[in-house]
Image (cartoon, rainbow, N blue to C red; front, side, top):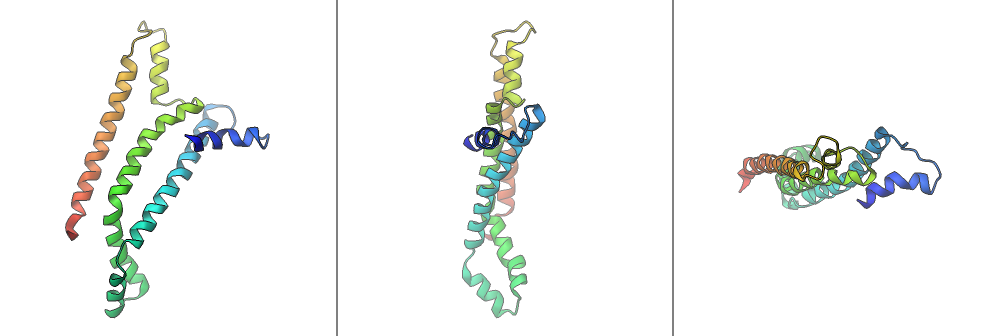
Length: 161
């Protein structure tokens, strides 16, 4: 959330140059940039840990077999790294889906904001909690589907065990 606020408000407050603009497109762009930068850092750390998690003996075995460094990376290290990074990547993807609700901090039209607007609207249900309930159900179903799909991917990649 802090990254979102900094990326959206910093250029206007400190540099006196609001680069994002005040419309829906500018807020969407600022939210996209903040999520991309934030999760790119998390994902790069996961990749680094996955590559370093492959034992050095695997590279030595490839060298003994006469493989080049490139062949060792793509045929040995990368395959083992992918298996190791699926669980933390799954966690970050699910967290990203949940974090998109934070975009309402800068009043970006997203699902929770739309549910609240519907609650306050003139549809005759003013004050009813049902739109937010359905929003929660949406997030639950979407994250449930992601969890099942990423769990199947983990089972498919567990052939080394």
